[in-house]
Image 1 (cartoon, helix red, strand yellow):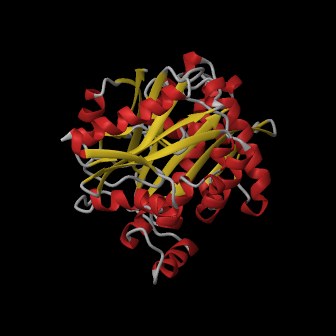
Image 2: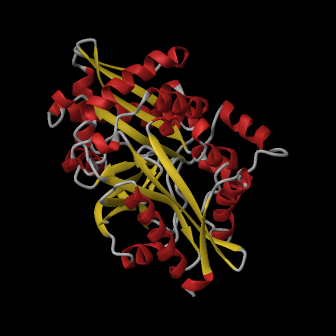
Length: 384
């Protein structure tokens, strides 16, 4: 069967469209897959529209059998990831592949082999994947949670992919966890006591962001993020072009009462970003805003009513990590956003993550508020 498969690079606009269209066929019978907006998906792989390409390069490939497209993959390297300490997961000689889809095991094997060849030609000695395209986008392969739809900015993959990737010689290197919880219920008494104690502390101020000062607030959050996450596995600092792109994408679903900044002695030291689950609105659109999808989406964005809120990012400055203060600030922000989510947006479910499986502080917070792991994404590696 392998001999019948041909792999060719994506070169033209038509190739890129074919690349984007393939998942719509592969997942057409999967009720839990959320079709991305095709314009957004195209922007991800177009250098002029994705700030990540300011420090990265990629080659996309399509697999064909008998003139029919049966798979796709990206091979890419990130010059910033190459400069990171090796003990944090990336570093010198580490390249990536992602955006992986395949109809069968033979196609999967040949696609991964092709991506590995491109990385070797670039001087890489280790492959990490799937990474689609950076750690800030959709890292990892879904290995638990295929029975429900992902939330905004999270991936969904066929269960067979795990066996196919491992058959290509890849070993797990890291798991990324998401936790879900019922946010209509108050948190356990111990959490409530911690929150009330914080409210009596004049040194602490928890405030919502001011969307009218979007750039200034984003700069505060970015400064905390780069400090808080600097030692984490897979950390690569965000660049200004990426920040600009993320701001454009997320600004429509940024709401003041869903993003909190914690101040200690008037200094911003922690933040929590919460997003209404945009996937609930775009899933019925089947990837297209036309002819009427744009109107439906604009109406939804005026005042979202959602079942789920997702917390994609939290951070506490490094000097406070592992302290009681860090946990207190986290619980206060979580509680204030929980109340707003229920009262103002009709939400009943929260999802936190992803969280690194060895991030003991965040895992402890998630467990203390009685959430449970609902999805696991696995990142793999292989010497080249």
